[in-house]
Length: 426
Ligand code: SF4
Image 1 (spheres, rainbow, N blue to C red):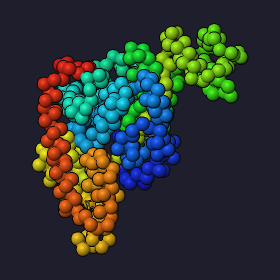
Image 2 (image 1 turned 180 degrees about the horizontal axis):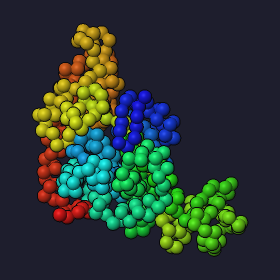
Image 3 (image 1 turned 120 degrees about the vertical axis):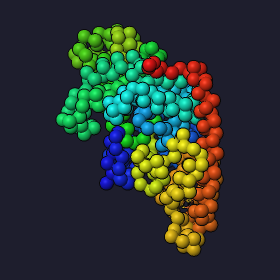
Image 4 (image 1 turned 60 degrees about the vertical axis):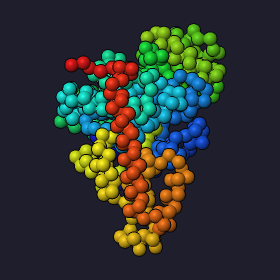
């Protein structure tokens, strides 16, 4: 049985069950609607989503939308973080405005690291995501340096109470206030791309690991709770209620749609998208937020190279983006595989790529061409490919990738002022 919270992932994860328990949607159901899906989508590594249809619609119809995700700078960036970085970069390339948050408030509150340290580590993440292709149009910020995020977090915190946090995160009476408050800061991270200063309400996708879903659920709820109006589908339009006093319905009554007015709500008839847009415009005009519930995608967890959980206290269990390439080669050569006890047995029975950390490296990171990945899979299954040769191939690809990535990082080091980075100064 797996334990999953934003701070802990343990045990073997059954992703179909996770989809059901968390109430996500399987990504496979919408894959054919995504224009040119990336390799993580095609391979079901991104296995779940919430409301990703909004993003597909925005991509196809060239409407404004954004992608936002963040990194907690408590340890150095590794291949697990690379996956989220690749997702942000991909979404930016297909037209989303990219927001990258460095969760220094969370690292400070949850891990107790100094501001200097979290800032220094935060820049390691920033250099890596830029080296992976993020362009200058992105907004990169540290939580503690963004007044938009901090002010919004304060507003959102007024909508959350203790018993709710306890139910979602399992907080106890020993949990400190800062750890509780960072849940509102994370919600503000997710929602702030929709502030009027950033162009107002728009679909925003948050690519995350499945362990981050409690944050997404809470934020989607908060987006609705902090809005002035709620909208509910009716047969030929939308039913609008005010969340903050019936007198606000006067603004809705003045909208130019066919309508029926009741004491507690107003029914508007017509095109649902048009009505929704108008109601949001009204809300913005009278000082509300009119947030659209954020969309999300969920990727699978990265297995530790040693077989079990990836752990920051066991450097041999993961490849850091800052590892010496030769060191990384050694880690790959020692990695846990889906191979059999002997070469003879492997030739006879074939390997088990679905249990193999090397195959995971290929499919998550090293091989983008599906035909080539398939060939490795089939040769492994058929006993034609043996682990020694296969690991060597993976090690060469990792070495090549790291050399190139680190060269780019060094180059970026001198060019950081080209980017829009909101950071503390010391
Ligand atoms: Fe894994 Fe490659 Fe061995 Fe197959 S041959 S089990 S993919 S290392």
